[in-house]
Length: 633
Image (cartoon, rainbow, N blue to C red):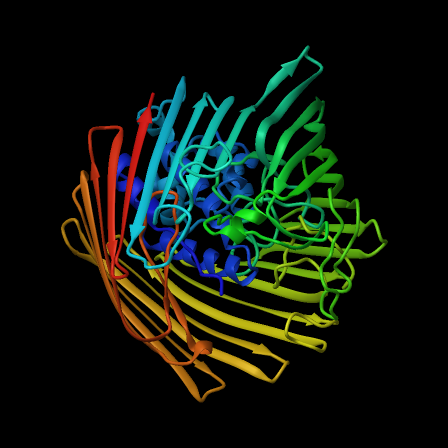
């Protein structure tokens, strides 16, 4: 069973290195996103999501100079809020404070509190202490050890070294070196483990006043096209419970900085852009990737692809990089002031044939040799309403379609999406909105509605219905699922609380689950915050699980201490719960609560000078984690 994962370690970064905090509201938001990623089976995307917000914490966005595209890159604002802010700036000048931002139409205290750590205002941008006129380097070293009686090929600890350097947002260089738990020190010629990732990226380089290289990466990278029906790598802060709607946003090419050893491309990619009068432009993106992936090989054919990246036993070492993968493609985009149209194409294949055993649930998802997808996508702004969609087809002629809308009616932000993915649509690199791990075998609809208030309160509600016309894994018949949830939350300078009610239904076996979860946190004394969490869930109304925890956070600007203890009673697997934990920077952690017992941990972070911070975490396993973060200007 894959674990739900979420990081609160970026709060440690904020306190230890920048003197800011994302706050309890921001932490709760990240936890909700983590839950959605796990439901889709792509929780590994969490690391790149967290690194994105860590970068914003370290170099806040100047809200008075940011373009619409940069504001979209916050992933925390609705289309209406972005348009409203741009209009306010054009007519009223700079926004000088968080209090003034609350006066912008569409903004409320809850939204401003959420984005406050990631933005700066007016003259604050000049005095923020962030160096924008030169290079900035970050070094992160972390590892953990636990007591274990299992025999592995290497030592019983995990280690990672990551270095990233940027120059004026024009150049970026990154290196990641990782040794997983139980792996050998030297694997495949790589010291300190078996995974080495490298990238070099450039932005906004002119080509003889004719065009510009808006983005280019050599090494490891991700590609994000359209609404994800052809290809989408890394996280997407959309869908599920996101008030920002279902529209996918993001650059077409992104340098890869995470430690997942499989879900990235390796080679070269570039976007060339030509600007035209009237705020119009044409952009061409091309990419090529060639790398080896982990797979089990039998009689010259691959029978399964392995994605955990572990190589600490003889069998996993035999599967390491045993299959060659090639990926290539292109995208052509036309951009106008209120419209974007794109044509996308990707091809891919392996250097061995597929030898998977054909079963009813997977018979339409197996291909041989080279395969690929093509699509056309569109985004348009019509007044306060944004509409978007993508129509795709694979090499076998099977199709997929997704379309959505986001708008504002009165004080309500409304978003909806519809989709229909054929059972035989094959797109292994896709990342469009889906309630399962693939973009196939489903049709459905989903919605999210939210309304905030000037006093810091917010109510949101959402739901989805999905029909699967063909069998799924362990479900030997067509089936349907439905979800409905509602949340009320409120935040102020001293406290934050939220309550969520939810219900899930699956037609296969008439299974349903209902639950309620809540959180209350506040400032108990100077530099001391206390937080209480609880959740109870009922499975078919005859099995109940319960969990509750208390957490204390003390910080004085140079040091921070986090203590947590939680009790759980979840004796049935279907009533299991997860509780999120603070962790090391750029890491994620959670606790599975199954059975009955106690969970606890302690985390200490200490600022050592202006540019260095040290982290130490101990839990009940027992497991010891250590992290070191350094900055170089």
